[in-house]
Length: 337
Image (spheres, rainbow, N blue to C red):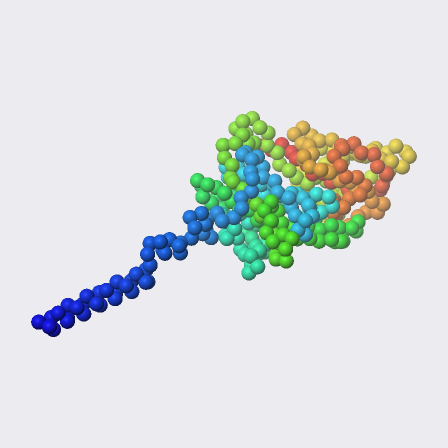
């Protein structure tokens, strides 16, 4: 009888010890709640990043920051039903030497270095450039990973921008990031910028359904000799005191107008740019850039560094030279897709 009581008592003691042990391991409901993340905290695969302000059905325009604080141009982001468009455009004398773009669903999805800054060389979309003032990426929406119900993209845009002297030599070079959200700016860390873009649908865009006209933007040059035999197709015109008119070619092969040269006999020449119907200047600062030469030029031209004229006039009177390079940031009407 005693042994039976001792046996039952032992069982009860062991059970109590086990329950106490479980309580110490599991804890009360309040202690569990204390260890949980706050209700408003976000995991790394959620939107735990800042979001750029954005106007509905308007292009998203970010500053292209060079060397942390220099405004070297803009990055403009738009989309239609099929593509995301990311356009780099420099200002002043800055020129594009490289551009890289990544469009992902979160900051954590960017290729990041140990410092936390993205690695532009590992971006999906990248190009080297021959000292140009603008470049546009056309990225298929099918290639992007985003939530169709909440199509928010983190856009990281990087560039190398340079300035050239009159001989086409680099005299300044900076790393540039586009965006309105700074990271480690004005601090010892690896600085960069980014922005976000919400894909836009059902807007009155220029897809032809609402009677809008569609344009394609191109670099245009007055017809003549090529600056270099390979690569850059840019051309300059031999004038040599004659009153002449030459074609204006966009994208190397599209005849969009004429450039005429008329001398006044007093050492000046009036350059007149005429566009065919459906063509014109892009809506940018200094869409017309002209450089005069006493001798035939060679090497890659740097329109951002042209000194004879920069502006938006279509009739310009300048000192007469034997040769002229006339560069136009042009647009021409195309069929809407």
